Amino acid sequence: MKLKDPDKIHIIYTATLKLVKNNGLSALNMAAIGKETKLGMGTMYGYFKSKEELINSLFKRLKGLNTNRIYSVIKPNAPFKLSMKDLFDNYIKNRVDYFEEHFFVEQCSNSHFLDSESKKLDDAAFVGVFELLDKGKKELLVKNIDNTIITAHMMGSANELVTMCMKHNIKINKAFLNQAFSLCWDSIKR
Amino acid sequence: MKLKDPDKIHIIYTATLKLVKNNGLSALNMAAIGKETKLGMGTMYGYFKSKEELINSLFKRLKGLNTNRIYSVIKPNAPFKLSMKDLFDNYIKNRVDYFEEHFFVEQCSNSHFLDSESKKLDDAAFVGVFELLDKGKKELLVKNIDNTIITAHMMGSANELVTMCMKHNIKINKAFLNQAFSLCWDSIKR
DNA sequence: AATATAATAGAATATTTATTCCGCAATGTA
DNA sequence: TACATTGCGGAATAAATATTCTATTATATT
Image 1: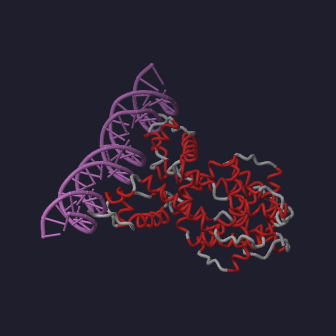
Image 2: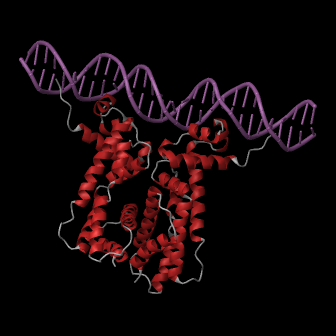
Image 3: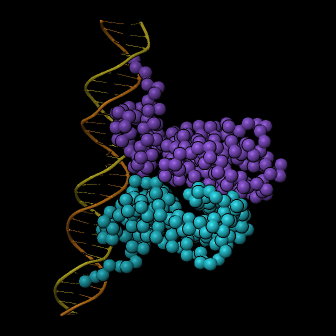
């Protein structure tokens, strides 16, 4: 007998990300994935029982990966401002390096494709920032403003900066990161 | 003879916004619009020659409306910080009051539905902020950081704040606006 | 009120897209 | 090498959706 090719799922994922980046989630269809991967319909449906399952499966995988990647950078006993800067830089670097993935996740978040399990995952991403902010507040380094507001402010800023850079083809370097972080730091510092 | 009902376009627009808010752009279909408006297919196709034209027509209308609404609040000779605060408050109020409209615009921006004309419109929205920032820099009130970065920072922050409020059902009041603005102001002030 | 014209509803059709099905190919096992 | 089993491609089918068509209705004009 023949065994399933362990690479095919990855191949399908990669093609899906590329297609969504180029045409948006709303234009994604199985025929296009088949063309891009050079796989037959039957093959794809051997790995995913529907288009919806494919989308949700990829979404969940990416959510997990990205959450790990982002927080892994915080060093346990580093001073607060440094942790903040590491997190900020890493977050932006991540958004750029894995642009396609983030774009896909964003498109899914506002679509009708996500099942309830995926939607849950979609929420629990900010926890690590909250913890860090609490530490900063304890040390009287951070304004006494609700974590939700501060987090929205910083994440929103970071996301929009990346979107803007991708749009205008701006290369992100140290100087850029320092300027961008200085805006965020000055906004939250006590 | 009978004349076209001048309200129908508006009725179709309203239903479209509602449906996209509830189910996302990718789930929008003409049958659903027909059901929501209680109009027949033929009627809708009397006003729009295709689904694509309907989407683009609504997109263009909203882009124009919103750009006007946002900048109309700036008083010509007000001091810089006050102009900034007015703009900020008004922008957020606008995002909340016209949530459906902004959501629709956002969904369209990342879809394959927009024609080239719509895409152009999609860009030219930040000009007013740039002008204001230049004024602030001339008065040495604003950090000497590229306008694009500052604007992305502030817009990103404002947008995410609104998204967050809508998600957690947080009511936006004066205190909230002041806190949110204080973050932004401290980040850009020299 | 009668007529002509255009709007309208919704069924019929065309188109697009998801999913299934089946013959063939590949490869583990004996 | 032969067999059994499962993977695979892609045509066939099903389902969803956009668009057109036509009989009917409404109303400006006379």
